[in-house]
Length: 343
Image (cartoon, rainbow, N blue to C red):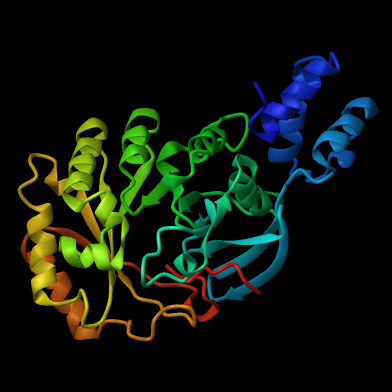
Protein backbone atom coordinates (compact mmCIF):
# COMPACT_ATOMS: atom_id res chain seq x y z
CA UNK A 1 0.00 0.00 0.00
CA UNK A 2 1.30 3.48 -0.89
CA UNK A 3 2.36 5.60 2.09
CA UNK A 4 -0.27 8.28 2.67
CA UNK A 5 1.64 11.02 4.47
CA UNK A 6 5.23 12.21 4.62
CA UNK A 7 5.51 10.63 8.08
CA UNK A 8 4.66 7.19 6.63
CA UNK A 9 7.07 7.87 3.75
CA UNK A 10 9.84 8.68 6.24
CA UNK A 11 9.23 5.37 8.02
CA UNK A 12 9.24 3.60 4.65
CA UNK A 13 12.61 5.21 3.72
CA UNK A 14 14.13 4.23 7.09
CA UNK A 15 13.01 0.61 6.57
CA UNK A 16 14.20 0.46 2.95
CA UNK A 17 17.69 1.71 3.98
CA UNK A 18 17.73 -0.84 6.84
CA UNK A 19 18.22 1.96 9.34
CA UNK A 20 17.30 1.37 13.00
CA UNK A 21 13.71 2.24 13.97
CA UNK A 22 14.85 4.97 16.40
CA UNK A 23 15.80 7.13 13.39
CA UNK A 24 12.10 7.95 13.01
CA UNK A 25 11.99 9.34 16.54
CA UNK A 26 15.14 11.36 15.80
CA UNK A 27 13.44 12.90 12.77
CA UNK A 28 10.15 13.70 14.54
CA UNK A 29 12.14 15.17 17.46
CA UNK A 30 14.13 17.30 15.01
CA UNK A 31 10.91 18.63 13.46
CA UNK A 32 8.66 18.98 16.48
CA UNK A 33 11.06 19.62 19.38
CA UNK A 34 14.03 21.33 17.70
CA UNK A 35 11.89 22.96 14.95
CA UNK A 36 14.31 21.99 12.15
CA UNK A 37 12.59 22.61 8.81
CA UNK A 38 15.17 21.21 6.35
CA UNK A 39 16.37 17.62 6.16
CA UNK A 40 19.94 18.76 5.33
CA UNK A 41 20.15 20.39 8.78
CA UNK A 42 19.30 17.16 10.59
CA UNK A 43 22.98 16.45 11.21
CA UNK A 44 22.17 13.80 13.83
CA UNK A 45 21.21 11.53 10.92
CA UNK A 46 23.71 9.67 8.73
CA UNK A 47 24.33 11.39 5.39
CA UNK A 48 22.96 8.40 3.47
CA UNK A 49 19.56 8.83 5.18
CA UNK A 50 19.52 12.61 4.83
CA UNK A 51 20.30 12.33 1.11
CA UNK A 52 17.53 9.79 0.58
CA UNK A 53 14.99 11.94 2.48
CA UNK A 54 15.93 14.94 0.32
CA UNK A 55 15.81 12.81 -2.83
CA UNK A 56 12.35 11.42 -2.00
CA UNK A 57 10.68 14.34 -0.22
CA UNK A 58 12.69 17.44 -1.16
CA UNK A 59 14.82 19.34 1.33
CA UNK A 60 11.96 21.27 2.94
CA UNK A 61 10.03 19.32 5.54
CA UNK A 62 6.90 21.32 4.63
CA UNK A 63 5.10 20.93 1.30
CA UNK A 64 3.41 24.36 1.45
CA UNK A 65 5.36 27.53 0.62
CA UNK A 66 4.44 30.87 2.18
CA UNK A 67 3.97 33.49 -0.56
CA UNK A 68 2.44 36.43 1.26
CA UNK A 69 1.60 37.37 4.83
CA UNK A 70 -0.93 40.04 5.83
CA UNK A 71 -1.19 41.20 9.42
CA UNK A 72 -3.66 43.24 11.40
CA UNK A 73 -4.48 43.47 15.09
CA UNK A 74 -4.13 39.96 16.59
CA UNK A 75 -4.42 38.30 13.17
CA UNK A 76 -1.97 37.01 10.61
CA UNK A 77 -3.15 35.56 7.29
CA UNK A 78 -0.74 33.54 5.16
CA UNK A 79 -1.15 32.73 1.50
CA UNK A 80 0.55 29.43 0.67
CA UNK A 81 1.58 28.09 -2.73
CA UNK A 82 0.81 24.39 -3.21
CA UNK A 83 1.45 21.88 -5.99
CA UNK A 84 -0.24 22.65 -9.30
CA UNK A 85 0.42 26.37 -8.97
CA UNK A 86 -2.60 26.79 -6.68
CA UNK A 87 -3.02 28.95 -3.58
CA UNK A 88 -4.63 28.38 -0.18
CA UNK A 89 -4.89 30.50 2.95
CA UNK A 90 -4.52 29.91 6.68
CA UNK A 91 -5.09 32.32 9.56
CA UNK A 92 -3.37 32.66 12.97
CA UNK A 93 -5.32 34.34 15.77
CA UNK A 94 -3.45 35.62 18.83
CA UNK A 95 -5.69 36.14 21.83
CA UNK A 96 -4.81 38.61 24.58
CA UNK A 97 -4.46 35.88 27.19
CA UNK A 98 -1.61 34.34 25.16
CA UNK A 99 -3.59 31.67 23.30
CA UNK A 100 -2.60 30.95 19.67
CA UNK A 101 -5.40 29.59 17.50
CA UNK A 102 -5.31 28.60 13.82
CA UNK A 103 -7.88 28.42 11.07
CA UNK A 104 -6.67 26.08 8.32
CA UNK A 105 -7.92 25.04 4.89
CA UNK A 106 -8.98 21.55 3.81
CA UNK A 107 -9.65 22.20 0.11
CA UNK A 108 -8.38 24.53 -2.58
CA UNK A 109 -11.57 26.46 -3.25
CA UNK A 110 -14.94 24.93 -2.40
CA UNK A 111 -17.58 23.32 -4.56
CA UNK A 112 -20.65 23.86 -2.39
CA UNK A 113 -21.46 27.40 -3.52
CA UNK A 114 -22.87 28.97 -0.34
CA UNK A 115 -24.04 32.31 -1.72
CA UNK A 116 -22.46 34.56 0.95
CA UNK A 117 -18.97 33.02 0.97
CA UNK A 118 -16.00 34.26 -1.08
CA UNK A 119 -14.33 30.83 -1.14
CA UNK A 120 -17.45 29.34 -2.75
CA UNK A 121 -17.16 31.68 -5.75
CA UNK A 122 -13.92 29.93 -6.78
CA UNK A 123 -15.48 26.47 -7.10
CA UNK A 124 -13.56 23.40 -6.01
CA UNK A 125 -10.11 23.10 -7.55
CA UNK A 126 -9.08 20.03 -5.56
CA UNK A 127 -8.89 18.38 -2.17
CA UNK A 128 -5.74 19.10 -0.22
CA UNK A 129 -3.45 16.17 0.50
CA UNK A 130 -2.85 14.99 4.07
CA UNK A 131 0.51 16.80 4.09
CA UNK A 132 -0.92 20.03 2.65
CA UNK A 133 -3.52 20.10 5.43
CA UNK A 134 -1.11 19.41 8.29
CA UNK A 135 1.80 21.44 6.83
CA UNK A 136 -0.18 24.66 7.25
CA UNK A 137 0.13 24.10 10.99
CA UNK A 138 3.68 22.81 10.65
CA UNK A 139 4.66 26.15 9.06
CA UNK A 140 3.50 28.05 12.16
CA UNK A 141 5.16 25.53 14.48
CA UNK A 142 8.52 25.74 12.67
CA UNK A 143 8.31 29.53 12.98
CA UNK A 144 8.16 29.32 16.75
CA UNK A 145 4.42 29.61 17.38
CA UNK A 146 2.58 27.53 19.97
CA UNK A 147 -0.18 25.34 18.52
CA UNK A 148 -2.86 25.82 21.16
CA UNK A 149 -5.95 25.07 19.08
CA UNK A 150 -6.90 24.53 15.46
CA UNK A 151 -10.14 24.77 13.54
CA UNK A 152 -10.97 23.51 10.07
CA UNK A 153 -12.74 26.72 9.13
CA UNK A 154 -10.46 27.89 6.34
CA UNK A 155 -11.05 27.26 2.64
CA UNK A 156 -13.22 24.29 1.77
CA UNK A 157 -15.57 21.85 3.47
CA UNK A 158 -13.44 19.63 5.70
CA UNK A 159 -15.82 16.65 5.80
CA UNK A 160 -15.96 16.53 1.99
CA UNK A 161 -12.23 15.73 1.87
CA UNK A 162 -11.58 12.08 2.80
CA UNK A 163 -7.98 12.99 3.74
CA UNK A 164 -9.27 14.94 6.73
CA UNK A 165 -9.42 11.82 8.89
CA UNK A 166 -5.80 10.87 8.21
CA UNK A 167 -4.86 14.51 8.90
CA UNK A 168 -6.66 14.32 12.27
CA UNK A 169 -4.73 11.12 13.05
CA UNK A 170 -1.44 12.96 12.40
CA UNK A 171 -2.45 16.07 14.35
CA UNK A 172 -3.34 13.96 17.41
CA UNK A 173 -0.37 11.54 17.15
CA UNK A 174 1.72 12.09 20.33
CA UNK A 175 4.96 11.54 18.38
CA UNK A 176 4.06 14.16 15.78
CA UNK A 177 1.86 17.21 16.54
CA UNK A 178 0.45 15.74 19.76
CA UNK A 179 -2.64 17.97 19.79
CA UNK A 180 -5.40 17.05 22.23
CA UNK A 181 -8.61 16.03 20.45
CA UNK A 182 -10.54 18.71 22.33
CA UNK A 183 -8.27 21.41 20.91
CA UNK A 184 -9.42 20.64 17.38
CA UNK A 185 -12.68 21.86 15.83
CA UNK A 186 -14.15 20.61 12.57
CA UNK A 187 -16.71 22.88 10.93
CA UNK A 188 -19.23 21.48 8.45
CA UNK A 189 -22.18 22.67 6.39
CA UNK A 190 -23.80 19.31 7.15
CA UNK A 191 -22.03 16.46 5.31
CA UNK A 192 -23.83 13.54 6.96
CA UNK A 193 -21.40 10.65 6.21
CA UNK A 194 -18.55 12.79 7.57
CA UNK A 195 -20.44 13.67 10.76
CA UNK A 196 -21.14 10.00 11.46
CA UNK A 197 -17.52 9.05 10.79
CA UNK A 198 -16.35 11.82 13.13
CA UNK A 199 -18.62 10.42 15.86
CA UNK A 200 -17.08 6.97 15.35
CA UNK A 201 -13.39 7.82 14.88
CA UNK A 202 -12.86 11.19 16.63
CA UNK A 203 -15.69 11.60 19.16
CA UNK A 204 -13.79 14.14 21.27
CA UNK A 205 -13.03 16.53 18.39
CA UNK A 206 -15.29 19.61 18.57
CA UNK A 207 -18.00 19.90 15.93
CA UNK A 208 -19.45 23.12 14.53
CA UNK A 209 -22.46 23.08 12.22
CA UNK A 210 -23.07 26.02 9.86
CA UNK A 211 -26.81 26.64 10.04
CA UNK A 212 -27.40 30.20 8.72
CA UNK A 213 -31.16 29.69 8.35
CA UNK A 214 -33.66 27.58 10.33
CA UNK A 215 -36.04 27.46 7.34
CA UNK A 216 -35.47 24.69 4.81
CA UNK A 217 -36.42 26.62 1.68
CA UNK A 218 -34.28 29.62 2.59
CA UNK A 219 -31.37 27.46 3.73
CA UNK A 220 -31.44 25.67 0.36
CA UNK A 221 -31.22 29.05 -1.38
CA UNK A 222 -28.31 30.21 0.74
CA UNK A 223 -26.64 26.78 0.96
CA UNK A 224 -27.51 24.33 -1.85
CA UNK A 225 -26.13 21.43 0.23
CA UNK A 226 -29.44 21.55 2.14
CA UNK A 227 -31.13 19.85 -0.83
CA UNK A 228 -28.78 16.88 -0.47
CA UNK A 229 -28.53 16.72 3.32
CA UNK A 230 -31.71 18.36 4.67
CA UNK A 231 -31.66 20.21 7.96
CA UNK A 232 -33.82 17.72 9.91
CA UNK A 233 -31.46 14.86 8.93
CA UNK A 234 -28.40 16.86 9.98
CA UNK A 235 -30.03 17.73 13.33
CA UNK A 236 -30.61 14.01 13.96
CA UNK A 237 -26.90 13.39 13.31
CA UNK A 238 -25.96 16.22 15.70
CA UNK A 239 -28.26 14.76 18.38
CA UNK A 240 -26.45 11.46 17.86
CA UNK A 241 -23.06 13.21 18.22
CA UNK A 242 -24.09 14.75 21.55
CA UNK A 243 -25.55 11.47 22.84
CA UNK A 244 -22.41 9.51 21.97
CA UNK A 245 -19.88 12.06 23.18
CA UNK A 246 -21.52 14.18 25.86
CA UNK A 247 -19.82 17.14 24.17
CA UNK A 248 -21.26 20.47 23.04
CA UNK A 249 -22.16 21.03 19.40
CA UNK A 250 -21.69 24.57 18.17
CA UNK A 251 -24.20 26.11 15.77
CA UNK A 252 -22.61 28.79 13.57
CA UNK A 253 -25.05 31.41 12.33
CA UNK A 254 -23.91 34.28 10.10
CA UNK A 255 -26.27 37.22 10.51
CA UNK A 256 -27.28 38.76 7.15
CA UNK A 257 -29.11 42.08 7.37
CA UNK A 258 -32.78 41.76 6.42
CA UNK A 259 -32.33 38.15 5.30
CA UNK A 260 -31.96 35.88 8.34
CA UNK A 261 -31.88 38.24 11.34
CA UNK A 262 -35.62 38.75 12.04
CA UNK A 263 -37.50 37.88 15.23
CA UNK A 264 -39.12 35.07 13.23
CA UNK A 265 -35.68 33.61 12.46
CA UNK A 266 -34.58 33.88 16.09
CA UNK A 267 -37.76 32.14 17.30
CA UNK A 268 -37.31 29.41 14.67
CA UNK A 269 -33.67 28.80 15.70
CA UNK A 270 -34.82 28.48 19.33
CA UNK A 271 -37.63 26.12 18.26
CA UNK A 272 -35.14 24.01 16.26
CA UNK A 273 -32.83 23.55 19.25
CA UNK A 274 -35.41 23.10 22.01
CA UNK A 275 -37.22 19.87 22.75
CA UNK A 276 -34.38 17.68 21.48
CA UNK A 277 -34.18 15.62 24.66
CA UNK A 278 -31.96 15.50 27.72
CA UNK A 279 -28.94 16.74 25.79
CA UNK A 280 -30.48 19.90 24.25
CA UNK A 281 -28.52 22.13 26.69
CA UNK A 282 -25.34 21.07 24.85
CA UNK A 283 -26.23 23.09 21.75
CA UNK A 284 -24.44 26.43 21.72
CA UNK A 285 -25.13 29.11 19.11
CA UNK A 286 -22.27 31.27 17.79
CA UNK A 287 -23.63 34.37 16.05
CA UNK A 288 -21.16 35.65 13.46
CA UNK A 289 -21.17 39.16 11.98
CA UNK A 290 -21.23 38.99 8.17
CA UNK A 291 -18.05 39.97 6.32
CA UNK A 292 -18.40 41.13 2.74
CA UNK A 293 -15.70 40.91 0.06
CA UNK A 294 -15.41 42.02 -3.56
CA UNK A 295 -16.40 38.48 -4.59
CA UNK A 296 -19.67 38.21 -2.62
CA UNK A 297 -23.02 39.74 -3.68
CA UNK A 298 -23.57 43.38 -2.72
CA UNK A 299 -27.08 42.48 -1.52
CA UNK A 300 -25.62 40.99 1.67
CA UNK A 301 -24.81 43.30 4.56
CA UNK A 302 -23.99 43.15 8.26
CA UNK A 303 -26.95 43.13 10.66
CA UNK A 304 -27.84 46.28 12.58
CA UNK A 305 -26.72 46.24 16.20
CA UNK A 306 -30.32 46.29 17.51
CA UNK A 307 -31.16 43.21 15.36
CA UNK A 308 -28.21 41.35 16.85
CA UNK A 309 -29.27 42.35 20.39
CA UNK A 310 -32.83 41.22 19.71
CA UNK A 311 -31.62 37.88 18.28
CA UNK A 312 -29.49 37.23 21.37
CA UNK A 313 -32.31 38.18 23.75
CA UNK A 314 -34.80 35.85 22.07
CA UNK A 315 -32.39 32.90 22.14
CA UNK A 316 -31.44 33.53 25.78
CA UNK A 317 -35.08 33.92 26.81
CA UNK A 318 -35.73 30.45 25.32
CA UNK A 319 -32.84 28.95 27.28
CA UNK A 320 -30.42 28.72 24.36
CA UNK A 321 -26.73 29.33 25.08
CA UNK A 322 -25.46 31.98 22.67
CA UNK A 323 -22.24 33.90 22.02
CA UNK A 324 -21.52 36.69 19.56
CA UNK A 325 -18.29 35.67 17.87
CA UNK A 326 -15.55 38.25 18.24
CA UNK A 327 -14.43 39.16 14.75
CA UNK A 328 -10.77 39.58 13.90
CA UNK A 329 -9.15 40.17 10.57
CA UNK A 330 -12.01 41.48 8.42
CA UNK A 331 -9.75 44.38 7.41
CA UNK A 332 -7.37 41.93 5.73
CA UNK A 333 -10.11 39.58 4.41
CA UNK A 334 -9.14 36.98 7.01
CA UNK A 335 -12.52 36.62 8.73
CA UNK A 336 -15.27 34.02 8.24
CA UNK A 337 -16.22 33.52 4.61
CA UNK A 338 -13.55 35.84 3.23
CA UNK A 339 -10.75 33.47 2.24
CA UNK A 340 -10.22 33.61 -1.50
CA UNK A 341 -6.65 32.39 -2.02
CA UNK A 342 -5.41 35.37 -4.02
CA UNK A 343 -2.68 37.97 -3.67
